[in-house]
Length: 233
Image (cartoon, rainbow, N blue to C red; front, side, top):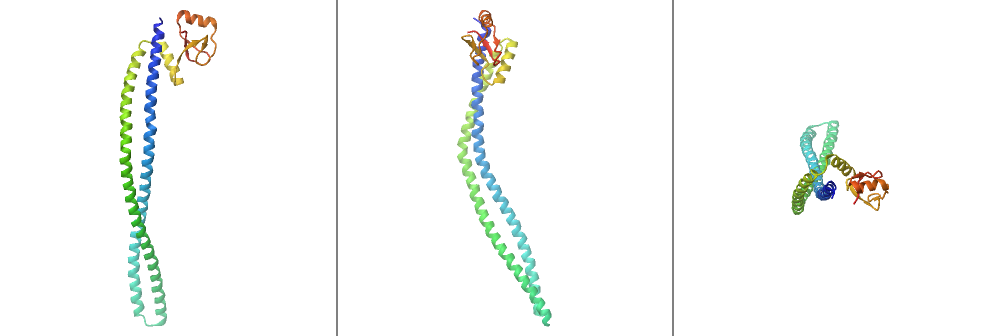
């Protein structure tokens, strides 16, 4: 019995277990990412609505201040118009009053439009925030399930990795380094058996003398074609 080969085969079998668990752990990330994308989309919509509200409210305050100033100026212009006696002065004062009245009307119309828009935006913001709360509630179970699965898999992965570490002790150091290098490069199986005199990974034939030596001595060779480790079964 080739004790070294048995140890390496056991290590490879355990690596398959570890890799499978790692794949299952990695598969959880896209599931969480999908939930995050939906939530981030809702947050972005809220932020855009809130930014619009802030901008409109700033414009509302600005208009309210300007309208107050223009009303005071308009009142002074009207008072001046009432006090003038000469026709030329009255005509100029009238033009000034009408220009002020037109400006006030335009700004008051804009203000009414903005006030309505701010009111609608606040209502929309409340609906969006309520929808976000509902979304968080609906995602809570899914996130809890994923986290529970992650915790369970993490425990299994830690146990499997611990066993892998123990099994690696039984493999000769130089061979282990070679095996690990091949396994890491391929991200898959590194040790293959000869199959009818050929590498069972790439189907490349192994010279008779070489495979006879492998069968006689139990030595583990590297396939010159694909670079995996070969053994005679």
